[in-house]
Length: 132
Image (cartoon, rainbow, N blue to C red; front, top):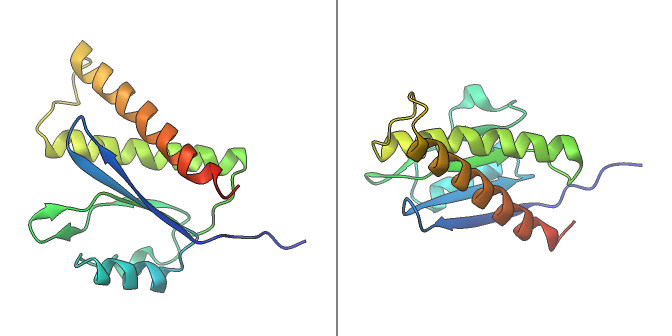
């Protein structure tokens, strides 16, 4: 039986750092770049066309457009782990963009990182629970 991949795009608004996370699931490389172009963003380089998943930050004008793309996603445990992995990359990028040091295990940074991971993963789960 062939897996069913439902194309899904959603935005999660982060009220802590005031950033948005854009998530594209089951988009082809071509469809992803069409969506990025329509949003007024830079495109994903051709060298990433065959990626299993990627977190990247094209720019929309001068602002970062924090993005996760997973070309084939179902709600199985291994796909959830990939989503979590990409969320971690985005959090590192967001903390760096806001000038929050990530190389020191300071309590504030640890708590911010842990909170953001919990928040983004929970919100992704909520968005996905409507289709899986």
